[in-house]
Length: 562
Image (tube, rainbow, N blue to C red; front, side, top):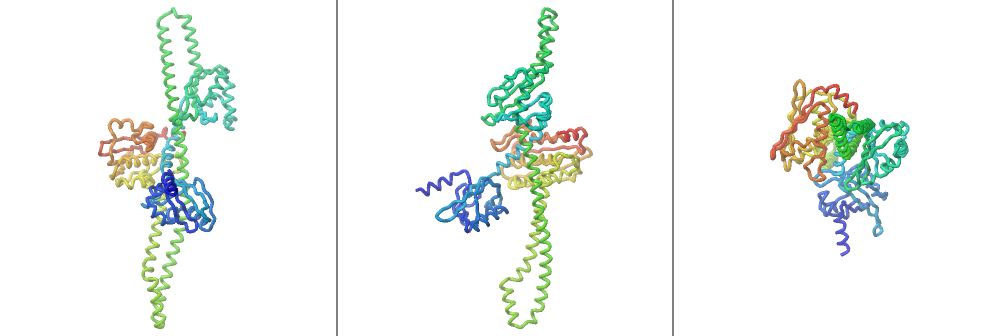
């Protein structure tokens, strides 16, 4: 009864659980989650070694040490697990060393980390765009987190408050907030507003500075789900407006009995001010969304650098393995020549020695070894070439040069992007390439690769069972066109006009954020191009990315500034 209850607890754990004997590295106990995620039955897993599933270099070293009696607990380590269908999944795992009945055992707790990485990748895409949005607004923006530390501020905020450069460089948040309070006549109100981060209500205050200026301060809580994680403050310099309103009030008091025309002008001025207030209130409402996009773009840049670094590190061992295999092939040819010479002299040996040699040749199957050696080396060289192509595609896709304008070939970018997302597509669709040999254009390759990645992944997601995706290119004197067509479910007409809106998605909760097409639209627009879309329910969708062969000087300068 107790053992059944223990197994029931194991099977209802949200993590994969595998118990390993370090003496022979055999898996001796597994739970249901491990069976479901890895695709093996419990009987199959308990017949396997842990190194049949964990095959990365660091895992092999760990288990070799464990076999020798040297093992230790590990927390939060990333690795890859080999599934029954031959695919590999990214996992986060922890290892615990246990003592049971006078012997050591190792318990592995692992969870599938693929969804976490996909979410992080989507969030990364919009960070740089949102930082630009934050800097482009005419308002001073200040974000304070729930620790009462400054999480973010834009340049307009620091300039309008004349914050000393020394404070900005030192990052002394307390000194900056105290500097704000000291410059305001309503010091108590200002200090209270800056400290009420957890207040769930919005607020609007007028702050009068000692130098005569007047700032309107609107603030609202920043939510993460149902939890308040900070507060966003928007500052508008309303000095001129306050002076105007004061002058209008005085004029109205003195000239109320005068002409009706002045009254109409005053009403018009007030209406303009109310419209401005409404616009600023809407901008503050959208700032919470802007914060999420800022985080996403920053992470995307880090992932690009990481991918390029991984590609560089893989190149080093691939290089010396390739060199060693080439030398091994030459050595093998020389040894086979020597073996041929020995065989030619075999008939001169005594009968007994020839019989012994023939028995040995038959025992080791020398003819098969001679035939198979060349095939093995050729297949190994071919595998290395495939690894080098994959590494090059990773480097081409990441383009750690960042936002620099380069002359690049769009079809090459399509191929490298397709290789990067191939695992997302290969089970859903056949990809048909119809390239026309387009010329190079001036662009930011890594950003356009991001556009192609979004279109390809969306096309794969739109196909429910099995279909096809067509990649087609064309060009003329002024522009080039990239077409991505799929045979998926199509887009409903009522949604066709909203697909480029930020955060609009028809995918289930947790499957998409609605930022991919919005980011793609912004990137293509920055390149001076446009995206067109056609779709028919039940038949599929076609996206056309039309790019100029040369970006305008103003667009290039704007990209560099961003």
